[in-house]
Image (cartoon, rainbow, N blue to C red; front, side, top):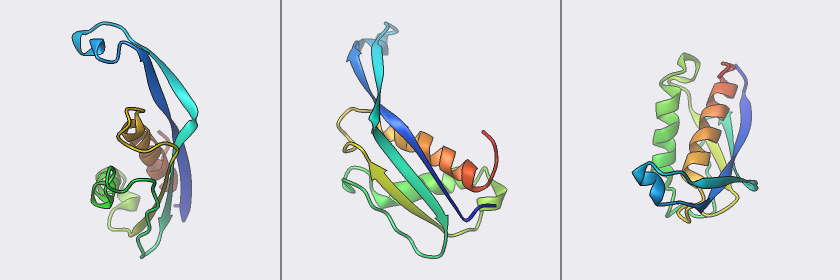
Length: 117
């Protein structure tokens, strides 16, 4: 198992049809490749989080997300893991930051435990 692993995922913008997708109609979305969520996981005993807006993405929820993912990876269970997060855009503005956070977190956790996705 590695001691540290970093991953990222891009955010997105829906150009047309943001609300009509709820009714099964198509939408046009594009990735915002320069607006990324970067996640670095490090095996350690201290807890660090850096983000643009902790009110929108609270630490407790981020830690709970990590614990959920780690539950599927035996090598990460019962380990203290530091999380360092950098948001390319603030969460809560409709850019898919929560989805990008989820993708980057899963990639980083699987990478840290050296399990292929």
